[in-house]
Amino acid sequence: MYLDINNISKSFQKKDEQPLQALKNINLEINEGEFISLLGPSGCGKSTLLSMIAGLSNPSSGSVSLENKEVTEPGPDKSMVFQKPALFPWMSVKENVTFPLRKQLSKKKQEQAAADYLKMVHLSQFAENYPHELSGGMQQRVAIARALAMDSGLLLMDEPFGALDEQTRQVLQDEVEKIWLDTKKTIVFVTHSIREAIKLSDRVIIMSARPGTIISDFKVNVERPRKQQDMAALEEDVMAILKTEIENVMEEELQYAGSR
Amino acid sequence: MPVVVKRIIFFVALILIWHGIFLLGFWPDSMIPSPFTVAETIYAGLADMTLVYDIIASFRHLLIGLSISLVIGTLLGVLLAKVKTADETLGTMILALQSVPSIVWVPLAIIWFGFTEASIIFVVIIGGTFVMTMNMRIGIKNVAPIYLKAARTMGSTGMDLFLKVVVPASIPHAVTGVRLAWAFSWRALMAGEMLSTGPGLGYTLSYASDFNNMSLVIGIIIIIGVIGSIVDQLVFQRIENKVLKRWGMEEAA
Image 1 (cartoon, rainbow over the protein chains, first blue to last red):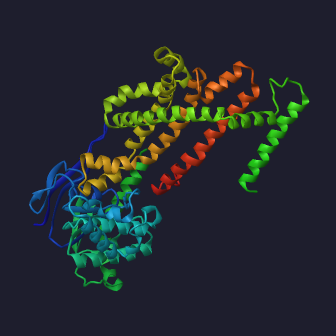
Image 2 (image 1 turned 30 degrees about the horizontal axis):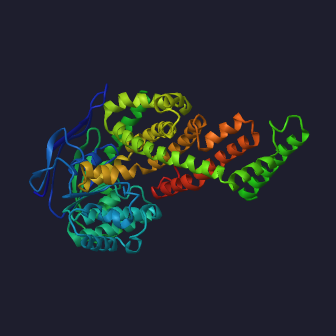
Image 3 (image 1 turned 120 degrees about the vertical axis):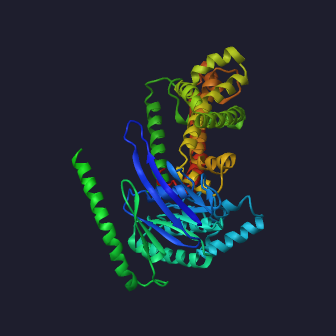
């Protein structure tokens, strides 16, 4: 198994408070080259799960293994794109993209890599610009180019388009799909958009909240590029699975609000 | 109306009012000199180079003192940001020291170093160090966690993470620290020089006071204010704005 998530639980202990269980008994197997989405209401722990795959945090129990090696810390074998671009503002676009390559490659090869990956996200002419001169969508493309430049087999994306407007979002979805088809990377993609999950993924992992568990492993067998009319029925299926879940969360939140 | 025009009108009016008060003659010339006498005094001082030497001497004290205070301030700031115990102990002391006006250090400096340039430079160093320390500390402590996370996923750890990410990310605060350190040092410099044996603007100021030379006193106060605001606006605010813009913090400024 390429990426194996083995019975993970995660609780957060705040001082003087009940421990909060964010994830409970998560089991998930992901094949090499798959495009997987983690979908669920806010608070279902999907981002927490992703950060454990990235090695940025460790599970309370259970383990994550990538190519049969346990993940304990972040590293160049798994690249990540965050909801915010997280570009270093003091570096030019090109320097940002070559940041992960500084130590591995010669200057010349870094230049080449930056040129290649910036071309892939259609930003070749902005290599010398600084992040603040770019729009939000362009910044996020640089972040994608930077993650791709690491050339890891696994690409983790944490609601990468969550902060963008709808049109930019669709353009970038298409770009990511194309990059995935070209590079055959394994992608784990966190989103709360049902449409986005269905459009992009081979499998949509649907999660419930408090504590976060997997409630459905939903396969999307629709030919790519996917058309709106083919996806509509699937969207409704996923919506139905999520509906009770969202209602539960809403009810809980209302009760919580009422009890205060 | 452009800002420059407003300012010119304001200062012209101010000088006219001043001159009007002078013409009323309620006070002797030795207390309220005419603005034109002050202008002549400044001109004479610049022409015979005495004021020029004073300005050069003051800037030399300032540059030596400020440079040392920036180095010490940066190192202390990093220490406080990185070592919790240092922050909890030394940090409190530095906060207390920061609230001590720099003129308070002058008597101590004179006992330690006598009426020498070392005394002046000591006071300047004390003036700039603590504010630089506190800004550097905040700069390093407030590096956005997302930068650290992103850097770690790209394989950056330890010293590399510190030098390539934490330090550059803290530069906006460091620049503010440098600007404030300059402003504090400039004030400390004048305090130190007034009790020195010269040369320097502060020395000439107290010398002029001793000889009841009011137009020179006012002239030097004007020079001190003008230099202070020119350096602040033309040098530091420009650098600060540039950095804030580059670092994408323009709105926050």
